[in-house]
Image (tube, rainbow, N blue to C red):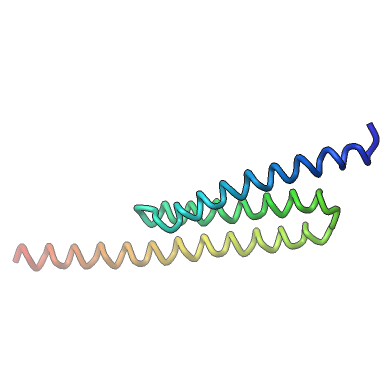
Length: 110
């Protein structure tokens, strides 16, 4: 098997993989929008970032463009920071709600 034959097979395979990843990404987007809890939304956003990186890697091999590896690394850092920020915001909102409930419970018992 020559390398050209490998790339012909891989090109067809890559298109199928990208379609599957796209469908999964749409499902994650729906989960991120309609998730019943905030942590469901955070996990869905994290998974969207991971799926995007997987798509970039598939395109990297399909298009044979090395610069896509750099883009993927940058996207990984941005995605990681976004999840950390979302987690911090959720934690702060949760703690504020918890303090408010405790204060209401103390005022109600008095």
